[in-house]
Length: 451
Figure 1 (cartoon, rainbow, N blue to C red):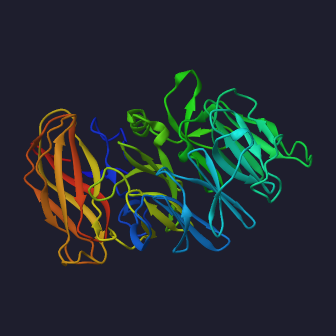
Figure 2 (cartoon, rainbow, N blue to C red; figure 1 turned 135 degrees about the horizontal axis):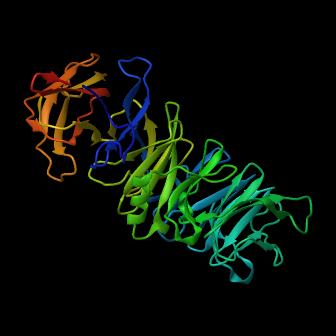
Figure 3 (cartoon, rainbow, N blue to C red; figure 1 turned 180 degrees about the vertical axis):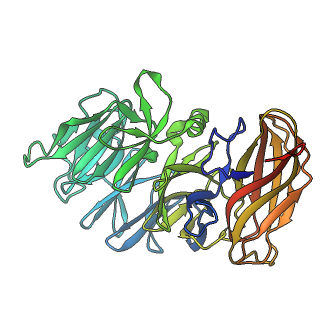
């Protein structure tokens, strides 16, 4: 009896126990023996450590990498100033100028760090650039201010407008092509540049969503569109959306349950990670977990770092990523099976459904392909099970994967009796092994009938 491994976290087809897919993602298999395989998420290779952390911003501008680690601002590896606070930072650049925004203040980043004065003492929540102007959204309002062309620090008293279709506050802003997208609490609207120097931006009446934004730092551009955690009117559940002609909800029931479990969704954040032809929207939900959406396949997985419930990366740009706990910078390495020196633990689940009656499970086979093997030359996989709907899991049972580069069949025997509706199965890999699981085969017997 052939059983597929879960290709997505929270897949409800895998019994009443939710499907598990941790630090793995599914892709089409060109090598067989099945049409789909599970691939380990890329590991993290260290670049450098700057400051005490956490890394709040990574941005490349005019060929220079700028980092904010803790309160310290670095140009390359040289500290050029400080930005108070510890929260994530928004940034935008045009020509020679780079601006960062946090805690209500916009900063011009150059050879040093200088606060930018706003008319009326307005506090800034976000910054983007369009048509050569820096656009600053104003905290606690639907208003935005804009600079003179190519001059981030000159903002005239009358250089302002507002998101017009909804009276609520602007949560965040993004640009897509020539358009500026304002994510308001309950709606999303587009503004476009004009040739009128007195009214340089105008709302695009044909582009409006009745979906707003729940968290500023979840809006991320990937694959020529934008993903974000959105709110809906009439008190609907939080969902993850993808921008299109109309917003497309991409979250499944499990992701939406995770969003609902967060005590402060405004602190959620996301980062784009690209590896081996896959683009991932990696969503960190504080206190709950980190979930990666594979844009190529439309499937979700759960990503974790060792000893944590979340993935340690929280921001990044141009292939360099910042750590949420310290001042480490990382790059993505698809061939690496560790995050620095830390082990990556991989989990995958399957479900053994049985019809009426009682069955004996003589054995269970996990089919996989191995690669370079573990450092000690003896990589292992562990297996456990629980009756469907139950919380009591068996102890983990270990089996050797075997030598690198082969197609081993890992077998567990004498697994007892099973009753309907079936049994949930989990497999755990660790120790730096390179492996690609394909499927599970169950030797299930009822009397003289074998499934």
